[in-house]
Image (tube, rainbow, N blue to C red):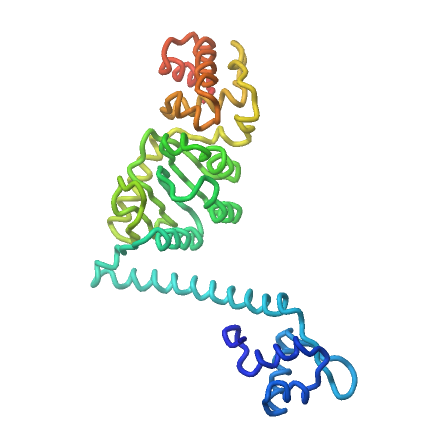
Length: 335
């Protein structure tokens, strides 16, 4: 029972007998398990050393089992830590192996990964192994609902890993994506920008590995490439950096209250130096190229509310087109 946790037979059998018969002696446990007394004594010594049992005073000595959830749970936690360390070492060795093998085995520069579950696992591995920086293109569709896959990124951000992510305007307008994912990530330090379109989904870890879908136009990602150090990886990084320079920053989302919690008040009055929080968010989404319908989805407004806000904003700027409103907002330093 406990072999997988590093305790050999008959430790598991003796522990189970001790759980069923608290304060048993070595002899009683040997009889209950049908093993020699010496074997039972050796097993008890191991159980005590591992914290799974305790010895009570008196003669003959008697033993008491530790609570299984604490005792076995602790051993499971230790083994999981060991497995994580082994996995990290494996990735480091594999990176060295690929780097030294590419001269004679160029096919090792690209792996094919099949299936959503395996792709998700490799993406998580890349993020977990990152020590400095993550680059990413983010665009729909999404397999999981917004907010369900952000725990790992949040842990990495809290550890000081830099995230630079370019979102497509469709991603920003995706229901729940802005509120549940993007805004919280920006608050933790993510460097977020938006482009009308991004070429594909992309994740690059420490400029050493990348994941891209096999087909950029797939409605559901079922196959992907893992790209290792190579000219192809260099090209993907150059593509990201070029798109980054052209993208609009979303850092104005940091610290702003939820749009859904505010009333749709008019834009900031003429002559004010800064807009209110909701107007700033509206301007960012407007500048990113979202339609009124997309802005409504992103901010959780009704379509009529969005149109009313846009009309108030255009009156504030004396603009007759959305483009003119965007130019005026930039001239005032609002975006």
